[in-house]
Image (cartoon, rainbow, N blue to C red; front, side, top):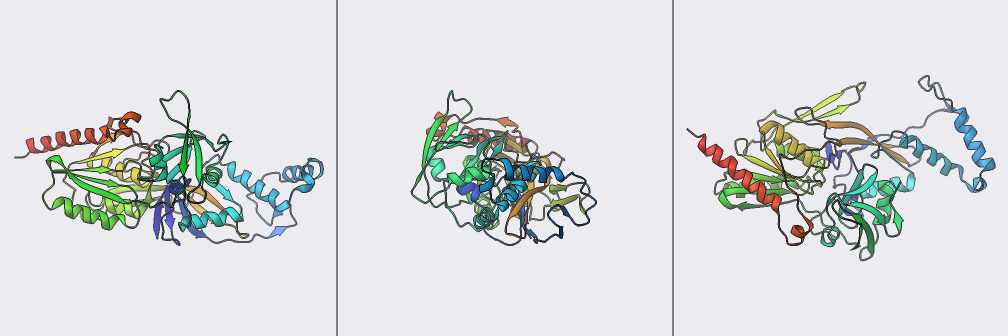
Length: 419
């Protein structure tokens, strides 16, 4: 069983990384894929489910509205009853008031599962919902969106000539994507701007990066985790070997603009930094669930368990990134530098229905080792450092510079405390 954090996924069928968010739009939160088999319910006529004492709602109101629409609405005669049914189910899911819970009619459900298999392209930016506004969670390195100047936290006001007001994330995904080589225009507003600006982005096939590393001055190791995919554990082991060959005084872990990946990968990487058995994250379900809590603990080789750690975060650090950053903060007292992380910590389960439609429902959320809720709260950095548009254009990185300064202080402190 694999859990994928994009949010986070219990991933039992597809083994490729879910990138509909990264390649053109987004699937916010987390989900379990392939865990629920479709089932047909015994229906008494068309008015009620057989023998369900838990249902106390007055369904006669629903059928009254159905009849009025069919008999009196101007477009009533043209409505297909199956489309009305899907609209009703969509409204039912929407009543959860949860932007991460979504209903997919059959065609959309098929497209969603194709996305899980990675069969699409786009602009290379994960998007999500924040305060009922569609925002960029993170652009991918060297993607069309990054090259065009899109940054994490950008608000998408329009796609082409269509306003995103009241638009769902999935609807935005549909119009942001398109054939390779075609152009999509996003109307963007960024905090600090006086007015929004248009960004024209040429769609392309997206290559998903995983990890970069190098040795900085003063024997400070630097690892930038860009995605918690299946390649990450092997690449991290390689990075660890190369960085420790000549000795290492401290390690900067950079998870900026990393929207997530497999939960198992986050737990695996956490094991390099903390003692075996240390709590990494807790999954909390509803109180009446068979197992309300499930804990995930470190099991790695703890090579860096005594090495000073600084973590770089920003608005584009979500899900798996926040789990690793939170685990290092709570277990190792690692210092965090940058901007507040996205705050994406719910788990969705994909429920297939018998006609080919499906629902993605939020079933749990994640707690950091000290009990803090990730969802909407995120992680606030110990040292807040922003990157201005001008600094970004010039390729400057004041956040990394601050992280190096903090690390040097930690190293000096460690040296002073040696007997």
